[in-house]
Image (cartoon, rainbow, N blue to C red; front, side, top):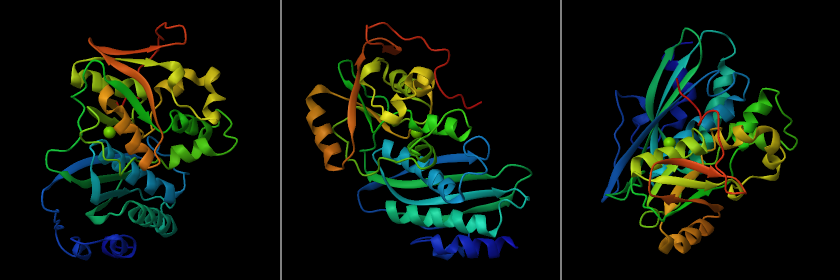
Length: 314
Ligand SMILES: [Mg+2]
């Protein structure tokens, strides 16, 4: 199977405006007047970011959704994406696999209203490597950032925490996922695209490497400290069931793809109204203080100690 046939079969049907049917050396993209481009990239490697026997369709969805989550963190809407695929020679990744993979891409393109603009396909000596560069847009000067938190702001998180990291453990056979909700959260995250938080929140990011570590990024960029309260963390019943045995994993594990924001007290009602309008649950889990670092307090107000602070990339 030639590279050009492969692209024509699986990826040409996904190309939208500006991609010129993937028949040129590049794509052309138009932005609405008064908007600027937001770019982000995310790579997923077989065995590291997904398991080879995960369904091809959900691998495609996770690939797009990790990138969409970064756009959500920037307060941006998706416009298009570039897809880079490096395929190992073994037969697991065959025509049927890529047909399902393309189905996952097509479904999420529809859900999140964006499309393929271009990319590259190569061979790979061992693992399957999937990369997406996503392009979004935002009104000029209105991108959200990590460095504007002020002492006194509240710390808020959307959705719930810990499901995806427990989902991975369930996939590895380390725990029971009775209703399948943990595995589903691991495979198909929910990026919080569509919230309008500019002018409401003081800082924003998405949680990909774990709550504590990602709070640390906001604290560092803003030059503040963050205090979190363990009993306020939003945990589903399926996660609560594993809390005693997997507490550190739930608090430090990654892959949540929820939004972490800080918000001045005067804007809290606006934050809650905006999230309610989009049916996105949001919970106040802590506060910004002067100083540096992240502290999590237990029910008695004692700081929790962890053996590690979150996902390490290297
Ligand atoms: Mg991110």
